[in-house]
Length: 189
Ligand code: 5GP
Image 1 (cartoon, helix red, strand yellow):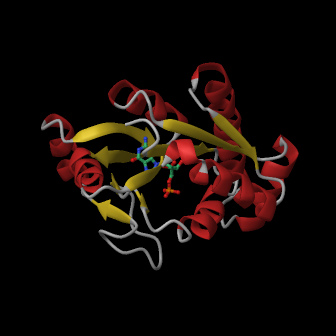
Image 2 (cartoon, protein in one colour; image 1 turned 180 degrees about the vertical axis):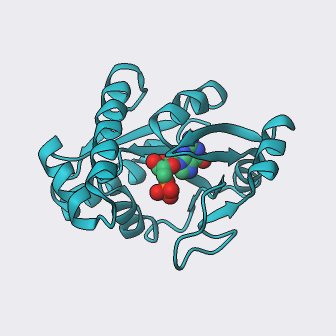
């Protein structure tokens, strides 16, 4: 699976979604992985496009039937990568870009050890806090918790994660260019 699977991970507030949305449309042969989740759809999110939205019972059945490449609980909800989705896309000759939390990535590597890892980092903890505060509808306590989780995730990724590339997202256009270069690399085709 070398050169066909890309996994992005980032702490919330690192700007990963904006970055991914900007770049992926330029690569028609790369599809974005659709995960299963028990979290409620946000405004504008569509089942089967953004996520496969599941009940807790449905998700736990997927776990017990071994239908997931990996799964994890993130911010109190289940998230996982359906095997069938990955296998179908690969059979169609597509490359796939995944968005996994840093712990899920470790489990993903047990199944697909050759996937290319891309870690997206904010320029600093101060900047991360600023971004979380800016976009937040959350309370100060929730923001503090997210910030602490983000720091733990970044430390874990640096110590245990297998990420071939790190992108510091201080400037969106510069970060987008770095991501393009990774996805365009002829060795990745
Ligand atoms: P959100 O709820 O904001 O869409 O995603 C929350 C977190 O869940 C993100 O950090 C994202 O990386 C992670 N995530 C999304 N899909 C999956 C998945 O299939 N597996 C794992 N392990 N994490 C996921």
